[in-house]
Amino acid sequence: MFFWLNFLLKSKSFLNNILSVLIIRLLSRLFTIIGLSLLIACASTGEKNSSEEVNAKEVNSEDPHEALNRSVYGFNKGLDTYISSPLVAGYHFITPGFLRITVGNFFTNLKEPRTVINDALQGKEKPAGEDFERFVINTLLGLGGLIDVASYAEIEHHEEDFSQTLAVWGVPRGEYLVIPVLGPSTYRGIPGEVVDAASSPVTYAMWPFQVLDLINTRSNAEQSLKFIDEVAVDPYVFMRASYLQWREFQITEGESSMENILIPETFDDEEDLDLFEDDLDIKL
Amino acid sequence: MMLVRKVIIIFFLYCFTTVVSAEVDETEAASQVVKGFQAELLKVMQEGDKLSFEQRFEQLKPVVLKSHDLAKITRIVVSKEWKKLTKEQKRELIRKFSTLSIASYAHYFDSYSGQSFTVESAKQLSPVQIYVRTLLVLPDDKDVTMDYLLKKSNDKWRIINIITNGVSDLALKRSEYVAVLQKSGFDVLLAELSVKIEKFSK
Image 1 (cartoon, each protein chain N blue to C red):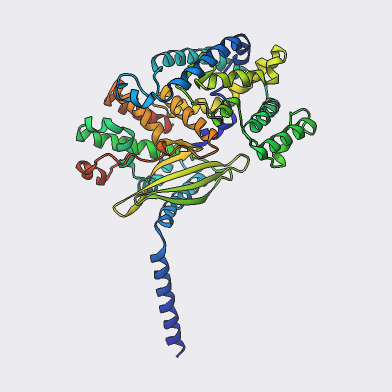
Image 2: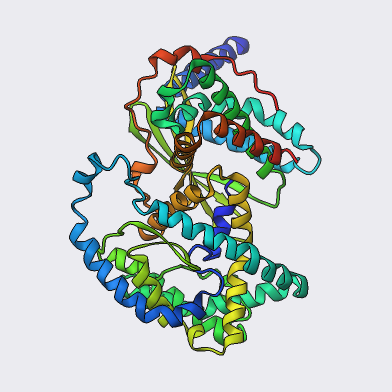
């Protein structure tokens, strides 16, 4: 049931969507300004949350921008249905599987320097060494990153980005946001995205490379997106809850926050005891 | 004489094993529930190609019902909305949710390509909650952490939450189901669940 999460880890669908790099180049300056002001805003309002929760019945405290987010989500969904999805279908039609893997390897390798820098910024020495090793080996022995030699040599791959670094530095997450084209994010994710785009070699490459990167990213996300369609009762909420939890898991290196995991022991189910003991006559 | 000796040895062996099994602590009991469930799941995966969806469903049904506390899970995923439901609605929801849970196992765990599970550790969080860490080992890929939260009721440990790579299934479903109940109501939620079951069975 949960294989999709594995795909999720490989793809970065939630952070990058089709056309992201192209647009980010245009919007990066704007985002920097917005990002910085939001950063200041969330730093100054971070403590108010608990007192506000009491009278925030109307507005979902988990997602105060839900109305806006939902409309952006709808826009992104449309973009995906009419542009990204057909492009990926075409890409799958004209390229054999092994070629797609090679393309995937190439772009993953290009992201390694970003990972190394963020490992270092977070003070993670061992992962930084491993990721640096991966980059050197794959670039030199793997024909510029086309073959993932390092994985055959069982050198572990990590995923680090600037938004995770900000989290490790203690910058509060801020509220959940859906960004046009890019998808799920948070206040903290905005400066993260900008720095990541600036530190990605693809941003400075010729446009065919950028388009191929985007198609590859979306193609990697194919199975996760299909999974969401299959299981989600409310895809927007599913995306939000899984995105926030998954990012938390990445940031804390596997030590997920227990509040999502533990059961609230507050409910009284005595009145329904017979229900819980019922012999369920389950049929398809 | 030989016979008497044998009987004595067997007697002592028997005593020894009962003492040991009495000492098996709660965490071991909880881990066993998880191990047992995962073993059955692997078995179904291995036979996956030969079995139809309906067959996998029937095979998994007793296994899932035994190891998961589906009624409690249903109760938790609808959170505060539970109180607003009538008894009949509650019963219907438990039944539908249980069917969906089994159907999704039968749908996604339908083939085998060398996967295996290992139990890493188990930790008692409270007298009635134990957290069991396991890994889903994939032959060509990074391992997936698949953790289980078990709750004790009626002296039995049963799975109540599954946490895959840090994503809590219970929290995810709770966000979704509460949102649908508040926005569209019980009938819509139930209809949505039926649609999912229908899709899984194809």
